[in-house]
Amino acid sequence: MSKLLDIRNLRVYYYTRYGVVKAVDGVSLEMEKGENLGVAGESGSGKSTLALSILRLIREPGKIVSGKILFNGEDLLKKSEEEMRKIRGARISMIFQDPTSSLNPVYTIGDQIGEAISLHQFNVEGGLLDWFLAKFKRSYVREVEDKVKEALSLVGVSDPSKRMKEYPHQFSGGMRQRAMIAMAISCRPDLLIADEPTTNLDVTIQAQILDLMNHLQEEFDVSIMLISHNLGVLSEFCHKIAIMYAGNLLELSDTETLFEDPKHPYTEALLQSIPRFGFKGKRLSTIPGKPPSLINPPLGCKFHPRCKYRIDGVCNKIPPPLIELDSGIKVACHRYLEECQ
Ligand code: SF4
Image (tube, rainbow, N blue to C red):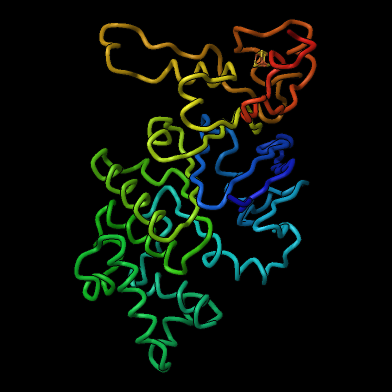
């Protein structure tokens, strides 16, 4: 496998009137071609900011302060806005958490999927309105519409010729998410970023959407970055999982090892807090304390106030570097440094 994504020491800060929020604070991670990577962590751990940075969608008061985002070897942070427009939706697509707020209520589903296709495959610039107006005069309209129908069929929307003329409010929650996926894969991207794509859906629809993404991954060889706070969902879908906490990457491991032998104390605590069969009548473990402030995080390891393994005098003073173990697993914890053993 070759490297598709290589994020190096990325820092993304939000400059608020209360102080600088270090949402992503020195994250490095890699993704191979054809690989599914899960990104997990509590709310505020920096998962979504990381995803938005890859597409360069961080808006004021946020700023990508430093680092590199190499996509197929090219640094996305050095691209112009015009170059990024050609990458977004064509080579890297994103599915957002809430399809209701991501879809435009005044355009049909077909228009919205057609916009991405017309921009990236037929060079119609100017956005949704231009595509909408172009429909009345351009010869390629039939071709775009055929591709819209094909995309809707691929994601399991029946009678696509009829349904592409409907508006988002005429679709159920699960169907809206399918439409978002159709839009995201319509131009056959290399990387699909799915930010909590199943959070607002019931369990049956969740399973259908994950099955669908699995199927699309196999069919089109697209790599998927799946962001979720639900480790159960990630375990079913991902080859590797990255655990984030307070803007830092704490562990990057293959899925099986992460569940069987977690290395970082935070990962261990997270796994112990998942309900399992046989737990009936027992209390679930919880992680004491709460996530730290991202404006004034604790010195040293940001997890140290909650960590039962902390080494006083070290963990509360020195931030642990991300190190690679012999097994290839990456972990940021002083316990794995020789001088602390
Ligand atoms: Fe715990 Fe120290 Fe490791 Fe942080 S560096 S997770 S405080 S043992």
